[in-house]
Figure 1 (cartoon, one colour):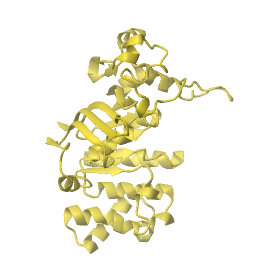
Figure 2 (cartoon, helix red, strand yellow; figure 1 turned 30 degrees about the vertical axis):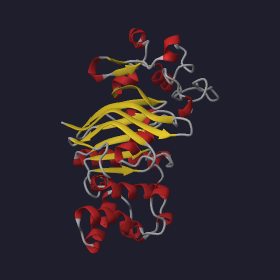
Figure 3 (cartoon, one colour; figure 1 turned 135 degrees about the vertical axis):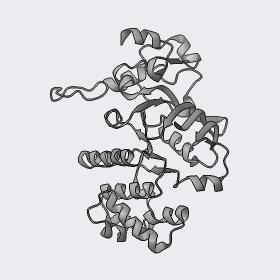
Amino acid sequence: MTLLAVEDLTVDLPAADRAVRLVDGATFRLRAGESLGVVGESGSGKTMTALALMGLQPPLARVGGSIRFEGRELVGLDEDAMRRIRGDRIAMIFQEPMTALNPLVRVGAQVAEPLVLHRGMSRRAAGAEAARLLAHVRLADPERAARAYPFELSGGERQRAMIAMAIGCSPRLVIADEPTTALDVTVQARILALLDGLRAESGMALILVSHDLAVVAGHCDRVAVMYGGLILESGPTDVVLRRSRNPYTRALLEARPEPGAPRGARLKTIPGSPPHHRDVGPGCPFAGRCALTLDVCRSARPPAIAFAAGHVSRCFRAAELEDAA
């Protein structure tokens, strides 16, 4: 059963001379219990896509296309209706909990707030449930964490508190925006394992926004690779990462550190820099940085070419890449 269906999602931000397109025609689906990884370089449109799903895009931004969640259209929904969904049916784990949490409010009260707003619990009952949730996300001393202010917790503890807040109302969909970026490798592994366990336990769907292909490979059923606001490739994670049909995805894979590489070995890099959204032309946003660039790549958006198993690539040379895979 399809839980979330996103069709031709666009996000435009007005500028002095013209609107700047931050997300360009994003299309994907997510079933209950499924996980989707959204990957790409900084500025590719990953976070803006996530914010648009929550109705948290910048105030002047214009959202187009369709976002159907549980069969209900969210694009154009009024703010009161979105508030009833946000934090209840859809929840978000933000990238940096130190800035997402209120520094002046104790952690337990912040975890309890959605329970008061969406479940109608009393403050006392919500506080008790908040302590249970903090224990559920494996905080060593949940009572201490509930009494603490955010600055009194470590980065890993704050992230666990954010997760507790997100899952309190048993949402159908959780969006995790770079949830492990500021954490060391050991804590990162524990947080990701926690999300996997919660998904298996409750059947919630997960959208994991990340720049780390290894994280997505280990924790997501499907993947969408974004660049310049455009999803250039999507499909089952193992298929996309093993038999990529897009030059950008392949460039990201080639830029990963090689296990067992000799000390001092140079990493492969992608020539050039990602374009600013104002500089994205009418063609493929990766044109110019891509070694396979054709003249048509600079003048026209590449079509979405479908392969087996729901694998889709936007590239004029996708058939050649299929033959070379």
